[in-house]
Image 1: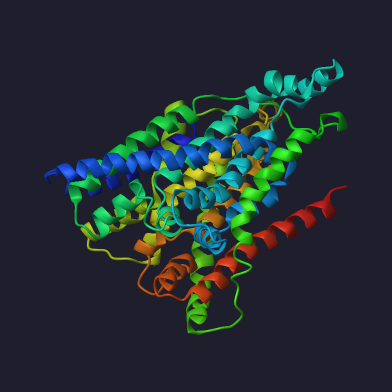
Image 2 (image 1 turned 30 degrees about the horizontal axis):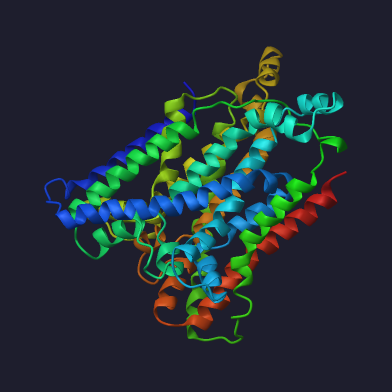
Amino acid sequence: MHPATWLAAAVTLWLVALALELTRAGLGASLAEHEGRAIVQAFVVGSTLALAIALPSAVLAYPLARVVPVPWLVGLALVSPLARAHGVLALGTSPGLGASVLAGMGEAVPIAAAFVALVLRTRPLAWLEAAADLGASPWARFRQVEWPSVRIGVGVAAAWVGLRSLGDVVGPEVAGGGKVYGPGLLLRDAIGFDGAPGRAAVLVLVQLAVGLLLAWWATGREGVVVSVRRERGHLGVGRGLLVAALAGVLLSAVSIGGLLPALEPGWGRADGLLLERLPTTFGLAAITAGLAAVAALVAADPRAPSRATRALLFLPLALPPSVIGLGTLAVAANHGLGPSHALTVIALAPWSIALGFTTGWLMRGRVPARLLEAAADLGAGRRQRFARIRLPLAQPAAVAAAALAFAWVLADRAITGFTTPPGGGTVASGLAAIVHAGEWATAVRWSLLLALVPLGLAASAVVLGRRSTP
């Protein structure tokens, strides 16, 4: 039995408990006619937003992954969605669908490129070099040799960013200015404000169904698994890829640049309150990153898990964070428990496992099955094979998964805002409260901080990587 099967079983139990608790009260509730129209309208708006973000992100993911180093992609993906929404508004953009798309693409483009960059590490470089020696054009090499191996990364990236956009709350609420009302906002209001369990039950079941279908589609192909080598010079980057990559960088960074003109120096009581939340934020992020790294190592097993296992482990990525936060709190309340840091870790665990497994699965070609078989034939035990072969070769996947999970917790406020005790949440949830209180100057300062810190870490990783490369 593949080790991922146990992870899939745990995630499935969590999903079942979540869905049952969120729909239990809604099964006997009536659904008014106007609520049915509101649900349809929300999914139409949400689908429009998701397609407007996912399709360009999928197109720009490959050029960015070829040109921009992975640490920079992860650094851009680390930027808080709330900071991006503030940056878009600071540019003078009118709140609405356009501002929501611009803020969403700033996050989606580097995330999609990061997924594709992971798959690029398992490209069939020997075939590409042979095709180049035979005179094949860059487009012919991409279409006939490279695309079959990278399309799996593009598919997973497009599915994930589309599902995140479909259930997004921050972008439509802040950058949309209340004019973009998608399923995420409708579900949050149904449970948190309107007391409409019937509407919430329908939204949860539809979101689960859509997520399962996309998860099944995104994880349907195995891709090409090959060894990894440094590519030769004649497989370099052409002018067209450079132009496309520049467009992707501009889309990823324009919302961050919008914060600079609105920056006001100073320090107030609100800044001190946010500073007090940093230890909690980094602690939760570190635990989540550790779980993601472990899941990535599990996925590095050369034996491919079943398609159903892959789809179930991908499914938590399809759920809106508000569903996860509200559902976990509802399950805990049903057992007499309230918000706590332990409950937050429980709520974050399935998502981090799903992200870690998906990252490790995309990079599983780094651990050749023949090498493990040869080690076993020479008498190496399971622990020796893991310590000497799987762990060193799968380390990049574990590091990438941990970085992405760490980034997501820093930016999340939909889950932690519900499951952490009052006053003890993360910086992102505190920042949202400060915005509602009208502390715009403080919001801009901390939004810029949430943007510059990960970019600084990315720059450090690039410099250290160059120094350590022989």
